[in-house]
Length: 384
Image 1 (cartoon, rainbow, N blue to C red):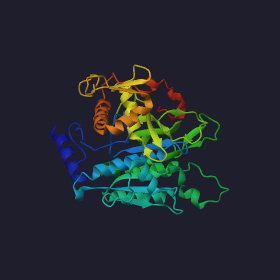
Image 2: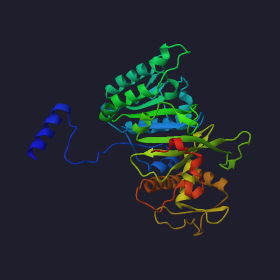
Image 3: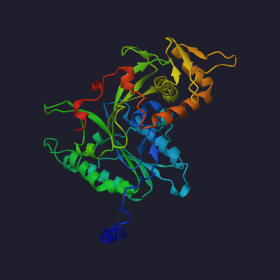
Image 4: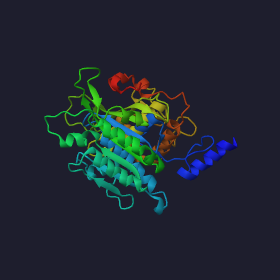
């Protein structure tokens, strides 16, 4: 035993405090996806310092999810002492970042004066060169969040320098795997979170599922969280779902499928949020939907909604002692807009309930809504 203690002491002296006796639960900051409907499937427990993948088809909302994380990151960093605050690195490989839409949709201010966004827009550099840029920034210890939009838009040196007639082997898989191997320890040291946005592409090999993602399997294995994003049903100004053929919808539902999580149970596969095209993520509608599913709003009588006291679990009464009834789903949002204090209490209660990891009384969205997750998660995305 004395020999092991001596070895542990020597290792920590040589390499820093990397070894200990027993495992201590670290107190790390946690990210929010900004919406109760999205945080529901992750138990609101995404720790900093991990690799994350947001994948999906074009226009599904992958970048929007990264904006939500960035907005939450800025809010939490501003609560820290000024000399300990960290910043964001945004790699815009596609050259399409829109600061106005980022703020309108999620309140992510890419030009915040306190928590800065360092912006890289590659101009012909190879994947290896871009990853080197990222590593240099993270090595400073002052970057807390890296958003890479997107992995699909970069090419390795081998591809960059060869003729279009010559086919390369491995593509992005090797440099991305090298980046993860070299930087996992670095990101862990500084508790820097890496969000890799990955588009869906067609597998032309003729084997297996035709839908896949760029970068091979190593990056998938290295990610602690993988979420697939899909464009769901459209809705009107009152939140009613529309047919796909409807003209001029107010927005659409973003559906997320939890493919992998290393820090919570994966029994809640489905997340949902409402994206309004002019106003951005509609947190109020998301709160109402989750509240109904958790029983904080009673919808047992068709066409009528009764409010529940989140502290006592009793039906709320008005000043005259009558039950508060809201007739019609379209009137729920206006009611809470005029009673923001009630919305806030319900919002806080939702986050309290969804963060409990051993509450088996809470049913998943897919069970409540009768959704077959195979339509969102394909076999190619399922973990071995």
